[in-house]
Image (cartoon, rainbow, N blue to C red; front, side):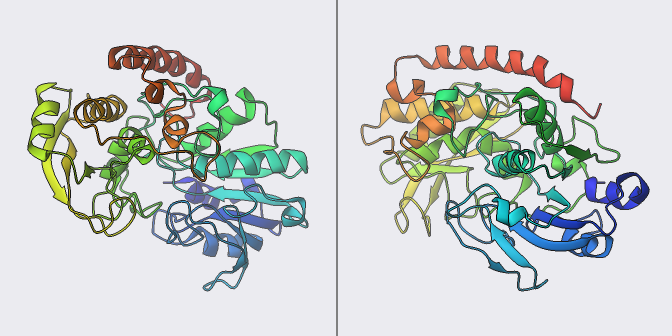
Length: 379
């Protein structure tokens, strides 16, 4: 049961009755019976306003699409955008609140912006002396496995704000505890834990409803690939946006699908299979063009390393196809997207071999796996 269920069953302990509350949420904010957190808190508190992350309060907007505030069509509550001109709640936005509550399903990957919507809100609450509560939810790719390299602070952005790996192996509530202590936010934080949760659980093990946290993650399976194949956002290769399998379908008009699949399968990456795949994106890169590439399948999630698979696939495509290119800096800052996604300039600059990159990732993962244990809530 997610944190919202625990909040309801322990009303006396958390005592938010009659407090003027703001809520950061979207369509994923549901209890275990599928009831929206908005409706539940409207009965438990004096729910005053809503705050919307990337993709909007109902999760329908495209990646990177900025939006302003307004009014929620269903509840009639005012909605303040945290993905427009401002990404931190302002003093005026927090004025009159007694508490700010966060309830959003995360994706388990460093470059997913909900983590930093939460972190920015924590910073704002610390600055304005407002308590904050995080209602915990499962990490869809388990809260145990750590994979990838630690972000270099020189490459800090809204898709990578703190020095954590691509796959960090914590729940969003545990991340809040770590951010607050390890990175010195220091807000008055309460994390409401889940019940009956175990660290090794993938989302399919929880019995909860999967509500896509953003249009690019339509299934819990897509989250398994996302920590690795998201790197293609920084290239001229389609990561499958505009298809039914974003972050699973990787390709471009100039790739030989059969050859790429053979090359990748010959590497025998644990738990991975690469199937020749043909697709025509309806949106994003190569929209309306016939693309050829691979669909990445996880055949054994216990040994599969999506970060290693994604980086290996990128290296192979870069080596075999002269048409391959990294994209220039975009809307997330002065550095190229590939640098922001990978947390360094190493891959773009080509000064390190694939083996060197993966060895560095292994060292970083081992180091972070020890650090994060201090913030574990669950066994």
